[in-house]
Amino acid sequence: MSVALLWVISPSSEVTSSIALLEPVREGSRIARDKYLMCNGRLEKGKQQRWDSGYLNADTRYSCLGGSKSKSRGKFSVIPNVVVSPTGEMAVSSEQKVYDVVLKQAALVNKQLRSRENLEVKPDIVLPGNLSMLIEAYNRCGEVCAEYAKTFYLGTMLMTPERQRAIWAIYVWCRRTDELVDGPNASHITPTALDRWEARLEDVFRGRPFDMLDATLSDTVSRFPVDIQPFRDMIEGMRMDLRKSRYKNFDELYLYCYYVAGTVGLMSVPVMGIAPESKATVETVYNAALSLGIANQLTNILRDVGEDARRGRVYLPQDELTQAGLSDEDIFAGRVTDKWRNFMKKQINRARKFFDKAEKGVTELSSASRWPVWASLLLYRQILDEIEVNDFDNFTRRAYVSKPKKILALPIAYAKSLVPPSRTSPLAKA
Image 1 (cartoon, helix red, strand yellow):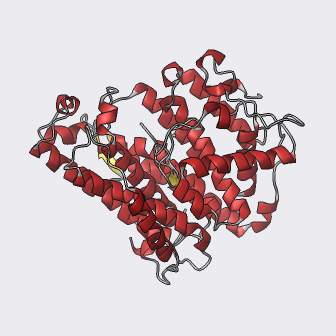
Image 2: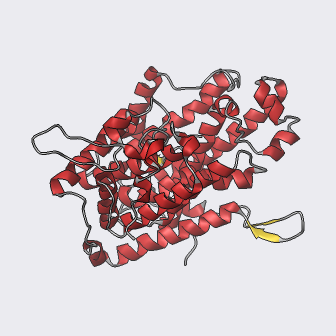
Image 3: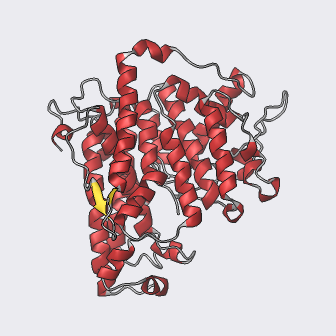
């Protein structure tokens, strides 16, 4: 199952899964392993630069994964806050759990904004190379983004060089993470391997990167108020993919979508920045970023129903299938019936509502960051239109946005990016 990188991206290729960061990673072929993935990246003097990619090879026994050295709420509503289990016990809903993470991320940014001098205090990073290698590693991240998220990469050209490089670094880490469970060696990945990857992440945030691609992320988190929790949560989403192939209800599916895609928005908003003139609270902007990640992942799920079914996976709420008079057997059989069409209409409508929420937040971003986000949002949303055009046959036909439609979306996205934040932000009233 691919991840839809939130504001800025989406995962599933040999450098990760999804963001927001914006463009679905699954659009396009896999990244050549020996070209982009590196666990032990080295530059040899006088020779062509070489980027080793051992971490995806099953016979390496995950050597690269073992590289560890060692309250103010917004006014929008979270529905529901609690749910009642069949036994009558009260439990916090997935949306509330995720909202708690949103509040934590927003609090971190608010703290940094109040104490700007802290932004200049950076932890010492123990680089596995030198500064020139770090620059080259950032450039490599940019190449990956340019190859597999073309529209978004084009938009990053408007960002400041520092923000540009940071977004590329986050993009590549997400792709590498997603690739662990969605790549060619996914069948060999174990929970222990993911534990090692998480330990390696901890070292990245301590300023002790294992390789040069890790070093770009270490450098990024030292420059921006990026918290580790969304990164940990994305890894948790990979764990979920290892042990779970069905989702009882939308509450369960929502949590999965947050883990594998909503997290990207929380990672990238601190880098993209909020417009100085914005009247929206930091919490509401984060919530909009989260909504875009959820929308993107729901779109992935609806687009890839047939592909996932062939892998024995169903990423659709089981209770809603039952209510529609459908079952897993109908999905495996790939029958497009009136029941299926009605079911899909409801699923598409839900995804569009999340896109609607996301749109309200894009305008609140820094002006230089809006174009790539708008482009990603408009293009990804059109996938839902294409599913409808295909008469809801997402079993044998893969919905995609044609090149002419993509080209047409760019000037529209740019025009939308020029609209300044509202003086009375609609987010504050949501």
